[in-house]
Length: 124
Picture 1 (tube, rainbow, N blue to C red):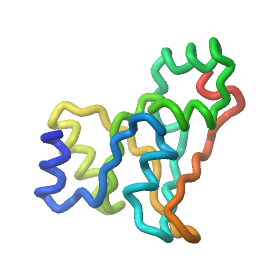
Picture 2: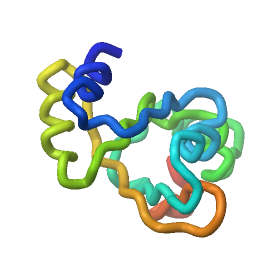
Picture 3: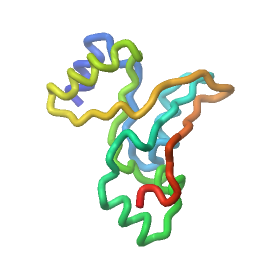
Picture 4: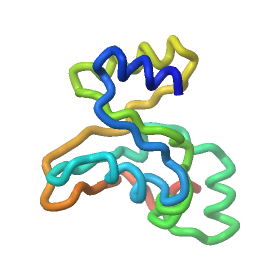
């Protein structure tokens, strides 16, 4: 939590989403205003092996895995695109593991989420 507070104090943090029950679809759009869509690239972070095991053992589809589990993303920090590298460097310096998983795009209506590069059978 202290690293996020440091981003906030530096004026870099625009929003943060703790990815708990509800996964990315249930948590990330809640911190975004209407008219924005988070576009997340599923190929940008390594999925811990336990999630592949869960998906295979339970025959769980990718969209359900993302809806129920965090799939390796515990927190999403929303920062301006121009400050993304600075924010990532600050978080890494504080000992955090950082992946740039996507960007924001104009959307229609309520805030949303679009996941790209989700191959068949992900995360298996």
